[in-house]
Length: 229
Image (cartoon, rainbow, N blue to C red):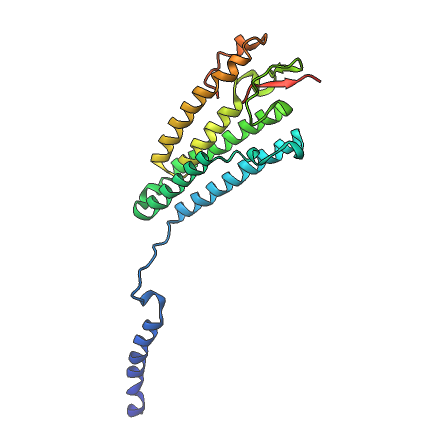
């Protein structure tokens, strides 16, 4: 019995290196570190926010203006926008791999998620309230059938469409815990709307109710005019 039992440990010891050699973890090649769970959750939330925002913008544009009048521009995706979002994704990936502790601030990420939801709601309420008046192109000519939208959310905000997008876009970066992109998005968008808003505002200054509404200058939608029924 002793003679039969002695080789068994040696066989197990000999088999152990062979098993290790077959194990992927024992390979000498470079290993790709896995993203932290928090970072993966943030990435999925970011992807879902992008898909829903642009998909719903296209659907609402088609609903109010007809499929024949809706183009790819209704997705609101420009070269500058793609570059900005690409930069945000690169930052998130880089920080997740080399500074994973930055992505661990769940309280901050949840605040960003709340900003995304609130911004989305504000913008979609603005689109639905304005109806056919809401377009993705600034109108520069006044027509007799135009009038200012002053009901609903427009009673409280001069440009709820812009406000919603500003809150949504910055919120996506807070949700990702991207410190650099958060600052860049906020500054660039604020500057963009500060230049964009005065132009349509000047075009509507002759409309009777504009002076009272213009006090909400930095509540960044387009000209905010609607068709009379």
